[in-house]
Image (cartoon, rainbow, N blue to C red):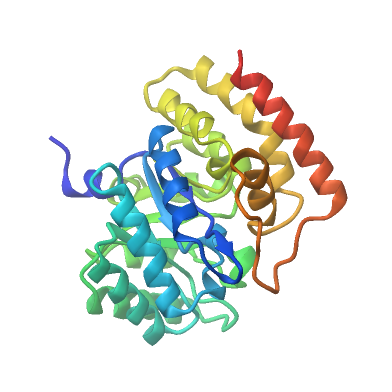
Amino acid sequence: MQSPLQRTLPAGAFCDLVTPFRNGAIDTEALANLVKWQIRSGISGIVVCGEAGEATSLTRDERAAVIRCAIETAGDQLPVIAGTGTNATASTIDLTTDAAQLGAAAAVIVTPYYNKPSQEGIFRHYEQIAAAVNIPIVICNAPARTASDLAPRTLERLATIAGIVGLQDCTGDLGRLALIPPGLKNRFRQYSGHDLTAFSFNLAGGAGSFSVAANIAPRFVSAMHDALRTGNLDAAITLNARVNPILQVLEREPGPATVKQALAILRDLDPELRLPLTPIAPETAAALRTALVSLSNADQR
């Protein structure tokens, strides 16, 4: 029988889902269709209002609309995790409370950005959030985006807080996984937040990934994680190689612009973004088209 944690945070690939816009508003119909596609593709779970979801450009009401739509569409077929992190503890508590009331399975909360808090400040941030909300918390460490890195000792302290159940590591630094004590690995689910190194991260003992690439290639990404979990290394290597051209293109420019352009081609999604994000450069668009052709050819094998 699965534990409550395993039901909330299964191993495998979670899609860090984009937020579709049309004429400046949330396109809930397109969002629901994306969720359904992810479910059909075998994804383990969905993250909304995360890195790819343009969360910092959404109002509080818009965040709630995105979370509600995803949860209503997914039903009990897979868990929906909501990104609720901000650079202020009070507003993070408010957003996390909203997510819990809407029925999110967990909240993924990035370390506070821009403020550059001390390790003590990071600890107290999560401590207060966990005390104020009744929902499992996944810590997201993305120092390239936040200018705030999570030290191993701080992670050990956070492990004493019952409501904190997982870690999303977006650094791409595989050495960090080796530094985590065995007892802490058992205490936390460890997820990669960096698609290009997710294969190696999971091979080294990770539980899965919060994947931006799964927006474009959900069947390949989910199958690769399934193969790793079942010990089918040859299949996992083949699947990772097939999706690698997409991973390389995603490294060219930050943010969801590349993903939305790919979905415009694959699923007729409006690639609309909110400033300060802008469409991808022509050379990135050319590389994307090449990668999508490669992916399509692989899908026919």
